[in-house]
Image (tube, rainbow, N blue to C red):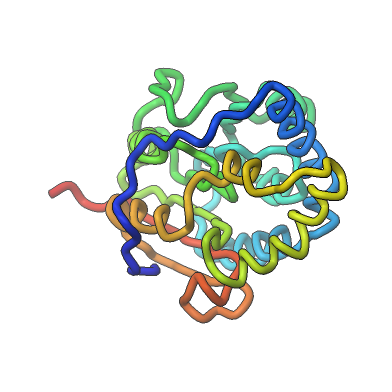
Length: 241
C-alpha cells in the first residue's frame, strides 16, 4: 500500500456547489458515462476484470457478498454469480439493478449514513469498485463497512489513481475532451463533484483502518500512484487495540 502521507484532510468534504443547470449537466454526464462512455474507453473495466480474476482463487465460495455502488457498467456483471446484496444510492441505478438481478437484495441507501438495515457482522466479503473516491464522508462509510464485516471478512477495493501524474494526463486526453465536446464546459468543476478525494487520501484512511492482504497496481505493477491508472486492494479489519 502506498505510504506517502498527504496534507491533513478535513472530513466530510464539501465540493463547490453547482447551479441547477450544472447539476442537470452532471446528471446527464453520469448516465452517458455509465451507459456508453465507460465501455467505449474500457481500460478501467479491463483492470477491474483482471483484479477480480486475481481474487477468485483467494475467495471462498458460498458466503454473503455485499457490493457498494455496483451501478450499470460492465464491471457490475463480474460479480453477478456471487453478489448477494447491493447498496446503491441512486434510485435509477438501483431499480435497473433490481430488474437485472432479481435474486439480489438491493438496498437504496447511502453507505455514508447510519444504516440499521445493514446487519452487523453479516458479510464475508464487501466490494467497492470505483466507489470510495466519490464519497465526501469516507470515514463514515468505512465505519459502516467495518461494522457489516465479519471478523474474518475481506474488503475488496478498486481505485483510480486520482491525483497521480499518469491518471491526470490520461483524463486530459480522454474524458475531459469528451465532456468538452458534449457540453462545451470545462471538466474540472464537474469531476471535482465526482472524485472528491485523491487516491493518496483514500489510501491513508484505508491504511489506518485495515490491513492490506494484496495490493496490485495497473498497468505497470510498479507500486506508485504516479505511474499507474488504478490500484486494487484486498483488505482485512485491523484487530482492536
